[in-house]
Image (cartoon, rainbow over the protein chains, first blue to last red):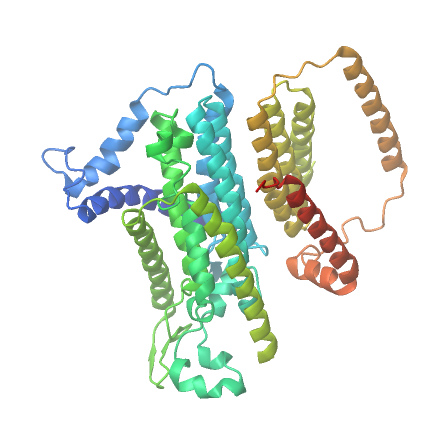
Length: 376
Length: 165
């Protein structure tokens, strides 16, 4: 009993710790990475006894300290309570969404079978969407409570954008849910452990030598869904090219224009936590989650017949490591994207969401349904 | 009092308080946020009652989408704080007391089922929900979805401005 509680608490703490720290490190990657892209030096001012650590001291120690010691300004005509509540909601929903994402298979330690996932809900991915839809409140309420026309406009834009792209996001995942036949993310990750040759029906046997050796990852079975989902996920994090809610050239800073100090830091950290969650979701749904190609529970089984058996802990370690690497890659990809493309116009964002992504997602669902029916 | 009762009564108290706040607060945005809190607590009840699917849908649809649209409208219209008249408050209070009395007597006098918690873990799972929706109740389900589609098309037609050429 106590051991079970301790295991759950340890998992929750570990995931929260990793997501928060990754969010902090992403702040560093964003500043130094953008400097690299734009041929600048980037954050290099702060140092401890001359040690700047490539800007790590600046972004991980000096910046948070500065945020936390700044004046916490609440607009006098605004709403004190809601102005304080909004950043909490934004950060909270971003942090708890990661709870259902599995970061490894079941690990056996001392007679305990530990599922490397904080919460194994049978509604799985819907929970992530629910938390994402609650995240809208952080923006809407924060924008309204600031009593500022710029932030109100930003809040309205943000909520419209997030609701629109939630629909495209949900529909794009439908194909994945149909292919793997479950809502549980752990089961989806497990379903990607087979090879495509095990799924191919007899009638498509001629494709066997061409694609049969590929792992049955979502990206190979649902490539269109991946593009739609990743685009919608970037739109949900409200970053360039979808950062209309902030739009500093039009709205100063959009919904958080009246936020300073620690509360701004919470919005900021929430955004990076959303990046981590989006990367975790993309990894789990489309890139096998914690799966390493050809790595089964007892070691590697290559398609050409050779084997390389490994002990249990090594296998689990490899899987958790693979998950971490994939998540880091997609975090980096999102940051690269943010510094590489210009911002859309607002009507373009809406047209893309409703008139292109939504129909494409529906077509994807239809095609998937027909293929599944035909293969049965 | 065991742990599950403790959880229930804590949540129920919070639910009653937040529901009262929806009615009693002056600022409309505060009312809306209290309603969101009430919806969230109800969704926790669904999860406790082995119906996580309904709970998540409650958050997704009501708290996450419909209430955001409510807030949208409230923020655009920016109504002045409500002034409630004493007569109206007294009348609605009387009605609420009556309803509460009737419901309490009905619920306490009703015979309890032999096994009040006959639900299993599978009872509210997505699989069971899908099986009943697309199996036993597929016709009502399809009729309801057509009805919703008609409503959506109607709303779009009504909201669309006529272009004068």
